[in-house]
Length: 214
Image (cartoon, rainbow, N blue to C red; front, side, top):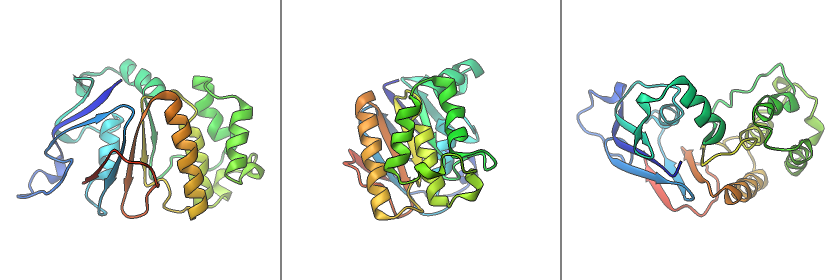
């Protein structure tokens, strides 16, 4: 996948609003593979909804969302399985980890589907993040910042053309935010992938191609 296009896209819940100022909603926008985008937003402007639309998780929007010119409303379940396995990775704001499972078990759920990373590579990332000792710890007993790091590692355990990160460092300190940026850039450079980050203030320090206001 080389591009994601939004054409006059707007959450259905916003349809009754008389005036919307946005670089994303109700615009013609193309997100290109290999580039990095920051989407800045105030709370309640639909950033998490945008991620859900593009991931095919929700379809309560007006307008068109297309991948390489193909309207995603026409995709089958099989199409979405392949897209989520090979083309798009998503780090949701709420993380969607299984709290009763350990850090390793959460990561392995994704990696067992793709076989994309070795156990050694995963351990190296957790060591970089300073949470290697949490390998066998249930996620529910970890801090939210620690969970964010686990969720990123899980998100990187697959091939992708685009990776979306919805407020990925909201609970991280500066050093862990820097490490997340470093790991993310190294992995996306290998794949020639695009990065889309959403933020309501605190965001990953990357060399963004474009900064958009939602």
